[in-house]
Image 1 (tube, rainbow, N blue to C red):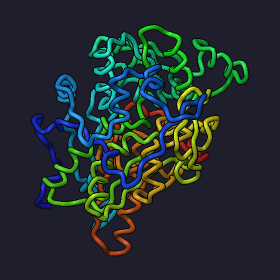
Image 2: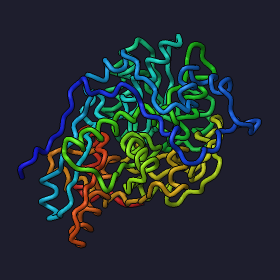
Image 3: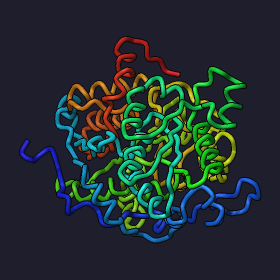
Length: 435
């Protein structure tokens, strides 16, 4: 093969602005509603839990929003991230497809989550906030916010879904290393957590419950605001650096993707890669196939209902129009903890409703089969969440082989799996089951 397999930009190529897909949507999204009045939420409503500068971004119709220099300086610790061509995987599959992946596991926290954690910590510090409260599923978001808060001098409290708290103890240790306080959710720290534990002392927890605890902590504490790692528009906005870099790197490779793939729980890493490409699909009718991949055990897009629902279990958040399994849905104890969420990002849901993206659901054992094949050919042990994207990328490459057609496939490897090895041990020992 004559062309290089790794495409790396320089620090001067870190994007100077985030891309806001809201500016190019062909149809306006339904607004979030106040949980009590059912009226569209106002800026004042949202500032009960977020600082005003974050709320302004959440509601902004501007196409480009400048990245503050202090944020770009921290991005330079790991950005731009590399784009790689999976040549060894292609050979193993004997496929004419070209498979590329954007690798976000090179960040200090090992995932894409610092892209928004750093931005949110910066804006909260600028607003005079002293402490951030948040939830985390697999721990990637919690560790990223713990890092960002340390860099900007903020305190950080994390409610970690209990099943992941015990499955992934090293992520808890990462958070504590960076100075965060971590509680297994449901916890004894909040009224809602105590209520859940009274009803079910063995409750494994969910992202919906952990969000409720973090919001309760926020509204009952002074100088504290809430920080969310996925779902909302401003989070998807901050993640757009992934796709903006990938566009330039695909140009370096001399190819344009036919298929763009990302795993989807709340929707942030899928959005980060896909949204800059969707700009061209919407405005220039470029024929990209864009696929969101979710677990079969928590299939919000493929089996959920599009309706207004709460983002948390207690019903404290605004009502959002999204594909949902119901805010009281308790996901099974799968190892892809970052995808155990009952709803999908409103903007990702809107794109699916409009037919601009596809969705696929994959069972857990099939996902780990793909993760193992990727690790044994490309050398990188992928996070269980990212492995959903790998599963569909492999499936599409095999289909290209069977049809004798070259396709260019691009997926987001949103994090490494070095702290998820207990999940791989379960798979290798035959203990991992589909639910």
